[in-house]
Length: 486
Image 1 (spheres, rainbow, N blue to C red):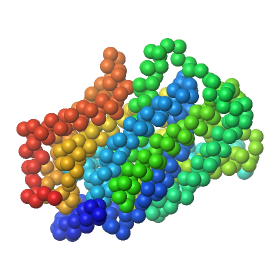
Image 2 (cartoon, one colour; image 1 turned 60 degrees about the vertical axis):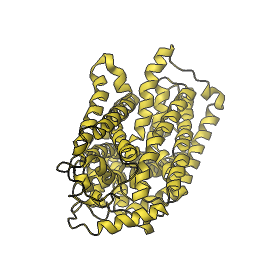
Image 3 (cartoon, rainbow, N blue to C red; image 1 turned 180 degrees about the vertical axis):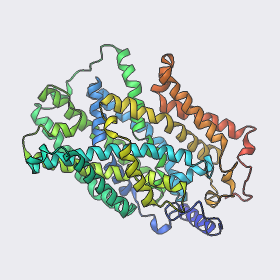
Image 4 (spheres, one colour; image 1 turned 120 degrees about the vertical axis):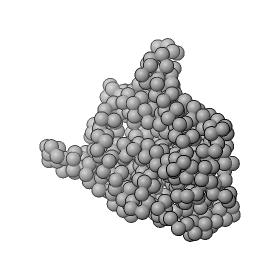
């Protein structure tokens, strides 16, 4: 019952705020009637988000980089178990208070300063939206080539496929969060069945799992393996580092803490491991069947001879990409952009901004090869998101002991105004975490700092924020403090 009580208190207090510039219907706490996501809905959400082409490419990219099947699977499994921890921790506030990520960030960064982590997260989401839209568009183009052979000669065919898939995403953006829940709940079981079908194809055509799983590691020494493993592990954590921040956007609809915790534990690591194994096995099979590792499933499908198999597979990839794109790459930036100006930017408008910016980020370059995908894109942005996660977790669990002043999260003159809307302790901690993580990118002797970007950034920001908030800098936290604590 504690969740319902806390939510009602927040709703009641917010109704007394005269200045409404920090709130709109999308950023307001979820009502009791909106808490409809049980364990299955949350698990299905993660299944739908995990079963997608980038996950497949993530796994097969490790194989292409030199790992054997068990080394790749171990790296992915460990990375997802690690990221599950901040995922569950950050989800707690969303479930308890019914607030989305940018509102939670106000507690640590300030009512205005929260736009810093929100925009950093939003930019990454726009990049992911572009990646998923590009992949989905290419799948549609390949499907059109099968259905209409003459389509292949059209130079603008890929562009049409891209825009068609973009339009499909926009439709669900306009329909809102309930359509996302429906899409994930009904699509998840189907997607797993299709994945198992692809695994069966690999088993039959490669002569069983023996030849597939006997592919040796390309690393000649232990040192070579570790040099590849360390940044790869960071990349695996970075893969879901985005959602580990904005998970309150979803957990705010959970029925209870138990639902969000068990749902995430059942939906994320097992699905990532299972679908990653499919990607690993199929990519290993392509070495045996075609003589080369084909890590892009759309390219792989183009080599199939059966039109029926190709059509069914492409349709499944399109559905899988759509479910992930809407849930993982639209909900958060839509709320983040809305946080900039709640009066003028709604969820739908924020989602449309995401759709446009995602195209402008030229996602085809991010998918140029597995190295750019894992070591450039995934690790690069994790250096920004790791420090944010460290600050949020330190503030909510260590500094505030899971107690937030619900009203002041929406009050421009309340406790979380700090100094003109900014908590400089959080800003300094974020800058320090990013600086230390990225310095390894420019100083070869300190390369390990970049290889561990998410972990280093998280630790530096967490510790510095704790020290600043507990030290003489503490008055900064309470400069315009509301007199009443919840």
